[in-house]
Length: 530
Figure 1 (tube, rainbow, N blue to C red):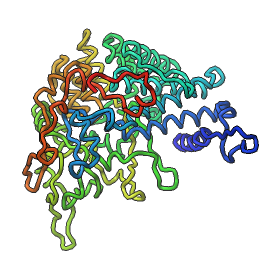
Figure 2 (figure 1 turned 180 degrees about the horizontal axis):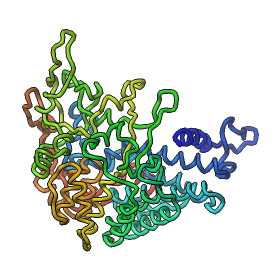
Figure 3 (figure 1 turned 135 degrees about the horizontal axis):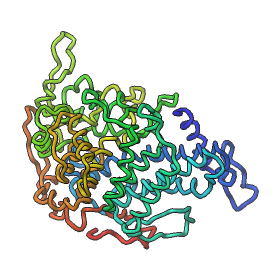
Figure 4 (figure 1 turned 135 degrees about the vertical axis):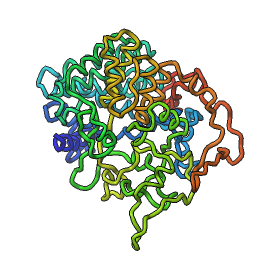
C-alpha cells in the first residue's frame, strides 16, 4: 500500500505539469510529463491524483500544528531567543496581523481543495471502484480543508469546483459552510469502505467510512448539532474497529512504536522512499527541547531540537490538580526541571553519569518539558541529520472520538454510554473517574488532547475563550536558567507591549486574512479588528 501511494505520487506530480505556448514552434510536449487533457482518465490516474492530495496534506502538517496549537493558553512559543521565528511568538501572544500571519495557513488548505476539486470534477465514480474511492476521499479532504479554514478564519470562501484564474470569490458565511461541510463528510462516509477490523493497520492511513463519520461528528459539534454528532460518533464507537491502547503503551502514541495502532482513526503515513529522504516536516525537530542551550539531552531523545513548544506552569499545575500524581498522563506527558535532571543522560568516557545543566537560558520556558512531541531518538532520521522524522502524523485518535461523544451526550441526554466513554479515557491513564458533565468533558479534553490541535478551537467554540484568557496578559516572557531559576523579561528590551496584543474578544477568535490574499482578491472582507 505504501509503495503504491508513493509511486502514484511520482506520477501525479509529473501529471500536474503541462506546457503551452502561443507559438506552434514552441508548443513541444515536455518529456516525462502528461498533459492535463490526457490525465484524469484511468484508475492509475485516480490513484496518482489522490496520492497527490495526501502528499499535500502531509506537507501542510507542519504549518497545521503551529496554526492550531500556538494560540493555546497552555503553551509558550519558545525558540532560541526573542526574534527567533517571531511570527510564532506573535501568534502565541495574539500580536498577529494580516501582514505577519504565515500565508501558508490560508493558501495551503486551498491548494488541497484545488487538487480535490480536480478529482471530483474529472473522474466519474460510476466507472470503477478505484475512481469512486478517489472521489470520496477527495470530498473528505475538501471538507476537512474547508473545516479548518472555517474554524480559524470564520467565513472563508467556499470553493467547490475548479475555478478559472479570473474569479475572485467572496466570503461565505459560517452558517452556510458548516451544513455543507457536514454534508460532504456524510457523502464521503456513504461511499468509502470501512476499516476491516480493529487490527487493520492500513485502515488508519487512508480515509475510511469510520474516519469520515468521526470528522462529520466533529463538524456537527461546531455547528451545535449535538444530536447529529451523537448519532455519528456512536456509529464509530459501535463499529468495534478502534480501541485505546493500554496505559503501558500510552506514550508510544507519539513515537514510532505507536504508528498504525488500534487508536489511530486517521494518521498521515511516513515511509522511506529508498533515497533516505522522507516526505514530512521538521515538526519534532522544532517542538523538541532546546538542545543547544543545555549540556546534554536524555538518552531517549535525539541530540538536537529547537524548543518551540513549552508547556506553561499554569497548565502543569492544572493537570496535576485534575489527574493526581499517580496518573500516567501526569507522570509521563510533562516533566519538570527536576524530573529532567533525574533522567538518564548516559555516562562520560570515565564512567561518570552525564549531568544536565542549562548553559543558555531556555526562552519562553518556566521549567516544564513536553514529552508528547519531544524528539525521540528512535524517530529521528539520522541520514537527514534529524531534519526529518520517521513516525506518522496524527490527525485524529480514538480518545478524541470518545470525548466528542461524551460531550454530545452531556449536551443532549445520556443512557450511560457517554459517561462510559469519558471514564474509559480517564481509566486508561489512571486519572480519577468523574460524572458526565460538560465541564468534566472540557477538562478531560484539555488534558488528554493537549498540544493536539484542539484547545484554542474548543475554547472559542464553547464561548469560553474570553473568560479563560481574561487576566492572562503576557507582558513579559519567562526564561529558565540553571537550577530551575525562572526569570521574567520584557519582550522588547524594556519597551511596553501594546495592550491590544492580548486576547481581544470579538477579534482574536479568528485569524486575519493575509494581506497578500487581500491584495489579489478585493472581494474578501477582513475579519473584525484587523
